[in-house]
Amino acid sequence: MSKILFVVTGATYWTLADGTQHPTGYWAEEAVAPYQVFEAAGHTVTVATPGGVVPAVDKGSLAPEANGGEEGAAKIAAGLEAFTELRHPVRLEDVDLADYDAVFYPGGHGPMEDLAVDPVSGRLLVDALASGKPLGVVCHAPAALLAATLPDGTNAFAGYRLTGFTNAEEIQAGLADKAKWLIQDRLVAAGTDFQEGEPWAPKVVVDRNLVTGQNPASAAPLAAELVKKLS
Image: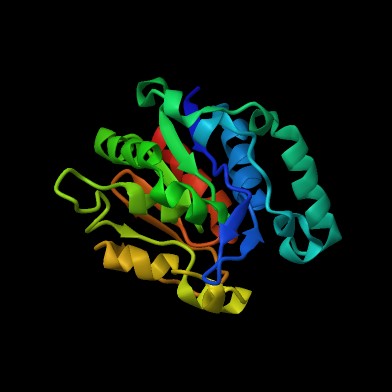
């Protein structure tokens, strides 16, 4: 049995380019699907958020249209209800990486608001990458990698092959023209080798101990890759 740290956004909104606050949080499928994969494999999960706030789910991620219909939405809602650790997070500031065997970051637009500029999360990511422990990051959560800077000012993930929510997907989601910045653009600028797959299709990229997923559909396959690395 391994212990997996879920680092979840504490943001409840995403500030758009015009200053308005777009309600958000974490994306349900990206938390629930990996949780179920990890639990089925016999691993335990601890949730951490900045300040230990109880994370907010993006209401849009609970809608039938985001889950393939009413049945899918009901399954996600039930999965979220069973994910009791989300309601009792620890403070990210108190986390000791040595206590965990793997680290996972689910997405939602929330990480673009807080984790992208969070120095505590940034240090954890630098340390997790250097430790060799499996590190999974999916969809919008790769925004958190932007805070993972080394003492010389470069990004710890520069040169790594990875993926995340693409510009094409943000355009199709209808928010690209309202955003201050886009994840793909910023990760490319940080020196990463960004791998873009077909919009909305599952895509997982593995480079050393880093496992990244492009979108919500990639969350469960990414979790399966982490389980393989833990076995």
